[in-house]
Image (cartoon, rainbow, N blue to C red; front, side, top):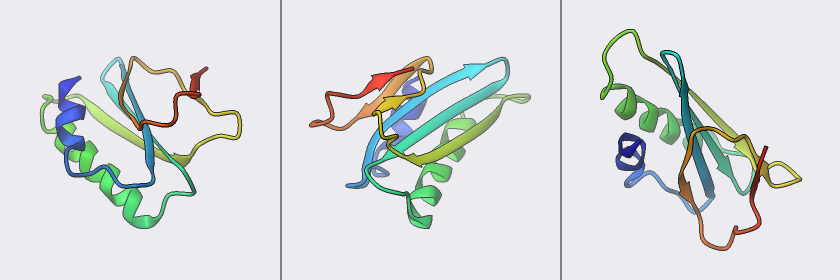
Length: 95
């Protein structure tokens, strides 16, 4: 989904570690993972990303964004693809 990568331009903060994306039926999902608990500003940035992405799709598509700190085991939810992964976090896995 180049739509997600385009929407991330200018939205990547120093705390953002990875963004995974996917879709099921008419729902597009964006999961953003941060190096620490995301701030309100971090969440708002990802909501803006979601708004830009959903603008590329016709109805009845919907979008769901999720923001969280990296889990202790560094395993991210495996969606269809990874749109962003910060260098230095090569040990991330997927479940």
